[in-house]
Length: 626
Image 1 (spheres, rainbow, N blue to C red):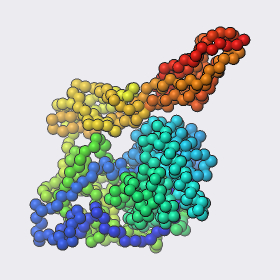
Image 2: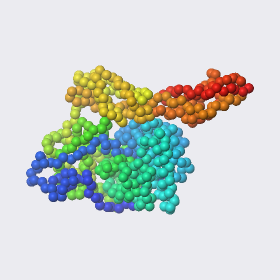
Image 3: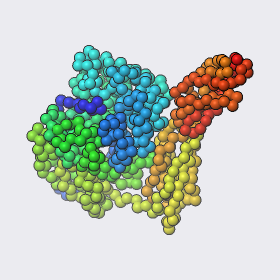
Image 4: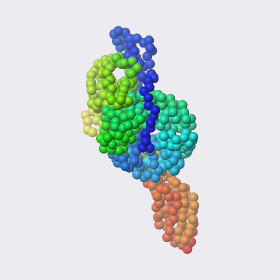
């Protein structure tokens, strides 16, 4: 919906196929892919509770992104600082936006958001833009901060916004994608970025478009439930997409609900509180199916619409005045429960079973944090809103009992109802009332920090290196050292307790790094503290001089672009006989005037970036005329 229009997907209430990770409700309760004939004893035998494999809790956080429109200057998105703050408060790490050419204000806004450690998926223009895909790739390479962009995307819903006749729009969207893929892979700054296939507005058009996989690293679709339960249409759209882009990781770049309950629209609305119930389920439905990421549409209501009659003005997690809707609070609560940044690890499994779930409705995702705690996310595939009648559905709660192999410390949260824990207990069984919202159960005692967290944690860039510094508050705990890890990175490093800095080498210039540090004791560790992102860099390469010509009292030099080596080139400087000329980064030709006549001279040319001035390149000697 980045074109200020919305996709009118063909909605229908279809049944949901049984999923590999769904709860299988039988006499045995909660079992991973339990056989249909499985039976349980009359009295629970806890020694026979089957273990369930977990996924990293932080992987669910990493699977969530949000759509934004930083170049919509007649909307609240014009305030980039406010947008960046609301994204950081939400806890989201990924955003999607359209890239505009010749838009310094958008480029500065992208930098503002990226400084919060948030990466961009950018829509790289469309066939009627008047430019080429190579122009957009060049803008990413030369105008945006290194590390800010994490993926590039083909044309957005060209079957909706382009020509009506498939004989026109299909070759247009394919040609644009082919050019984008070739340009992205040919440019060193973008060669390693995944390229997403073009999104289509209507699932039936994937068969019309044919094979789109040759020029894409990632399959891309828009999957709006259309006012119905979150699982609606996911399987059908996925099947249609897979026929066109087989064998690629899947990212859903648009999904969500609008709150224009006063609109007469083919895309039904839901009230704000219903969206607050549905949105955590929507993300988890996509996680359940193995989607790499789901971008919710969108962060902010673009226009003030008191009557709620315009769907396009009501998709936001935030209202037009930036106050949070229930969906914003629900997602913030869910992400906060699961956020666990750090080095990769192999999660374990948990022996748990459930009884009392209505057949065919149960869903779960079991996650584990690095400190060993599990977070079990439970929900039911039920509707809490009748999209056709535009009225709420009274969902009778299911009385569910979770049983574990032994006593556990249990904390119950309901992200759609608030951030505070609903219940805390230590037991080998837990009774829950499960309605239409997600219930999160944290299982196992957390590792209580035995030392204070490091403070004043900073990272300063160097040439292929970074220096991390920190302080430690006064404490009676016996700190044995500090563990420092980086993203992306290798295994954590441990330094002595007396250390307050660490220089990390063998980094890649131009790559964005985040360092995590925690204090260690013999009994546990402090909470982890992260630095702001840092991009190692060094001075630019010397320009390659192509032509030098002498004239009356002047010398003109032509050169090729210097490599920024981690930081974009910001200027070039020419020096000859004490005279200096400075030009902008886009210039490739300059003249030094006012030189003595009939003088044999040469010119020094060097480039500057955010680190400083690079090595000079010298022209051959030439003689000025009089």
